[in-house]
Image (cartoon, rainbow, N blue to C red; front, side):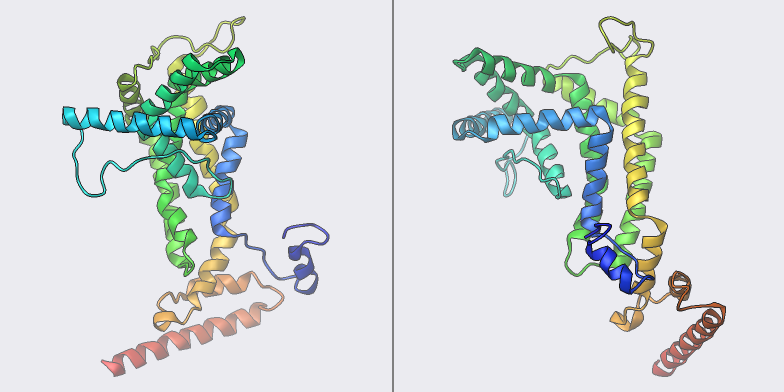
Length: 330
């Protein structure tokens, strides 16, 4: 599509230099997650571990059956203790599915299930470590088990899940066939505001959730004022709190916001909102003179100063005419 020489974008621009290329919105959203997972080392390592766990358990019918068995036993235990209730649609079986690189929603579902059945996943890995006949398999599974039971893994798990949750409405809107551009742009701006709010005031609540999760699963919570261990050879000069707050929490959210701004820039927003203003559905319900004027300004070869003045006059006339018709109808 975007090839410099023979891509469809280049071929169209040869005949229509004023054309603008707008990538699929749903795919653009997915690419923001892919970019963050590649650019931030902790997120990259996190998804590497998650993928290995999914492959280790999901590629074997026996291990998947063991996972289901652990879920059933855990469910019975929680029901007896009164921690959860029974009812239609509640306590459904959860599975593990490897997320697709081009599907935002699949990542969201995978992380949600990983959190919900975490104890069952850990139990399956423990069984594999104890019963595997091969030393190398025991070592590999043991490493995975150690990784998912580290505070840092749990922190990134909750952080990424929360970020995906805040943008899940946008993802659903972009997946619709009858996509409402104005609504999608509104949800995009809402998602960015939510992420910014989370950055400014969401760390404490996230830390509480992570610490509570670690407490339930017997995972050690480090003392946040102690030095964060970067290397066995060098003494660290930063604390655990600084690492998780600045190098992970702030850095990951900033990367996500940056990618959203880069991939859904002002030009694309102006073009799409301008086109939506010309949509006659519901008697031009999304009509906006300012958006149409902004749209015209991007096509300088078609709209010079004289044409823009003429368009401004014609749009005013249209608005006045619509107002007269509306008053006459009532």
